[in-house]
Amino acid sequence: MKTKTALITGSTSGIGQATALKLAHDGVRVVVSGRDDQRGLEVVEQIRAAGGTAHFVGADLRDARSAAELAAKATAVAESAGGSLDILVNNAAIGAGGPTAGTEESTFDSVLATNLKAPFYLVANIAPAMAARGGGAIVNVSTLAAQRALPGLAVYGASKAALDLLTRSWAAEFGAAGVRVNSVSPGPTRTPGAEAGLGEMLQQLAEQAPLGFVADPEDIAAAIAFLAGDGARFVTGAVLDVSGGRTVV
Image (cartoon, rainbow, N blue to C red):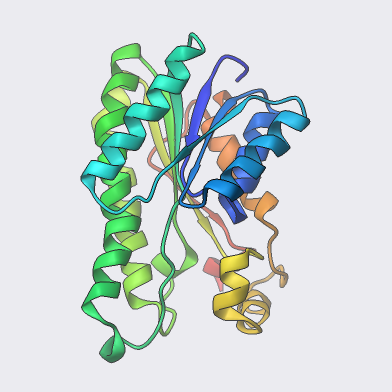
């Protein structure tokens, strides 16, 4: 892992930040990305203070153009260090919720643009180069709501269910060239966004699973790091549940 570079979208907080810290701890050069420059630079400084290597590239992933621009900038960062972009973690997402009848079209469009269109075009701009080099790892961050119907999360769940389908499609498309594509499907996780959006419901959802507790972002980051690493070299097209067992009950 020490010669690899990873781009992690939405890595200025929560699961993305924990993943950036984990991969950097494992020796990966990390490209931190997000909309908030200040928070992004703070994550970079945190990584560097611990002896890791990191750079920040700001991005507001809304469309194909913004995805292509981020891919180009992250690739340039990797190449400036004498390497290549070997790992992509599609983590950036909008977690909008609410009843179907009250969902504004602008909200629907924003969720699909960030959660589905942006990952699609990031892969379109990054995976071919991975394939040409004969290897790479892509990890998409999904959600329990893509597999279990949760009231009020129709659009969010649908966007992530589509991302899981893309995971399998990309695994088939790029597998022969050595590029692995997998998803991690978190259950209730104690992130700033989840706590703000779900409040007490976060604990209630966790109690419905066999393990019964809310995950920390580091729990999800560990699963992402596994799928991104060489220890998972025979794993592709998988959706790894990290939900405390919620999908079995």
